[in-house]
Image 1 (spheres, rainbow, N blue to C red):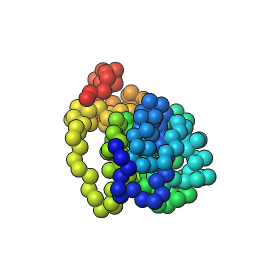
Image 2: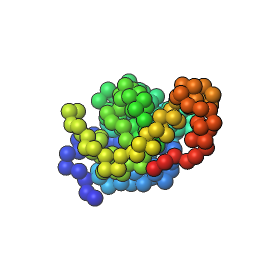
Image 3: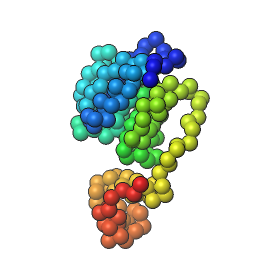
Image 4: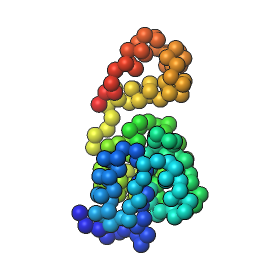
Amino acid sequence: MSELPNLPADKTLLILDDDAPFRNRLGRAMMQRGFIVSAVATVAEALDIARANPPAFAVVDLRLEDGDGLDVVRALHASRPDCRAVMLTGYGNIATAVAAVKSGAIDYLAKPADADDVVKALLASPGDKPEPPENPMSADRVRWEHIQRVFELCDHNVSETARRLNMHRRTLQRILAKRAPR
């Protein structure tokens, strides 16, 4: 794919993701689209870049081994308020989407997002509404995500999570033992 015609003069892009194959694949795809890419795996590396030479664009994973991508988005906006950051995560839910936007992200994409989706999000005008997703999460997946979020907020306490969800503890344990639905 060739360089995009509506790419601004400053094409610097930070990619922060601890999934090396995904990070490398996305980095190559974004370079082919005309971006100048810095791809890193840790929050510490991303914070160094955010402070020393903040990019015009950023694609940031939400959950990383050494911290939270929201901290990186905040640091980018402290150093460069016009930075357009997109949050990526495999844990898509409303609460984290709201937290990402409050931290300064312009969009929130669930993994695996392809390069075209990322470019659309990065270059979208502020008033543009995103198109509905081609493959939205199923109702079972949305339910599972909600249960996982409440479980996490209850510090992985099954009894407290079951109480808050008004669910029997053993039913919750069976749900938590299963894999995520598609």
